[in-house]
Length: 71
Image (cartoon, rainbow, N blue to C red; front, side, top):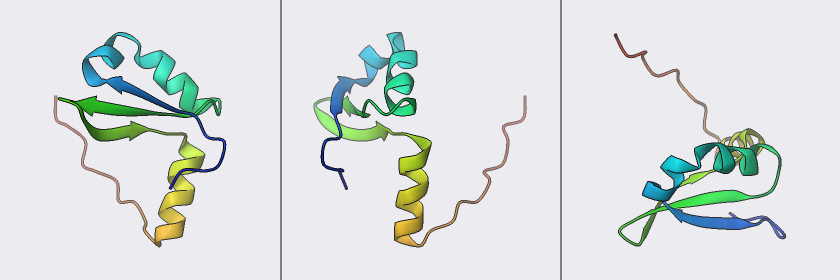
């Protein structure tokens, strides 16, 4: 689901590793999503929390807290 006027940035995962803060900033401040690719395939997206929550609501889904990693 892409909203009209929403920018979509496409970047390789390897490239986003070096500019992760930029991708998060785009999502956070409404400048669009960043679609992550691996070997040329779209595999994930970094979107705003508002978009994520609206998508969950639209799909009728609720989140469950994942167990924390033991250190």
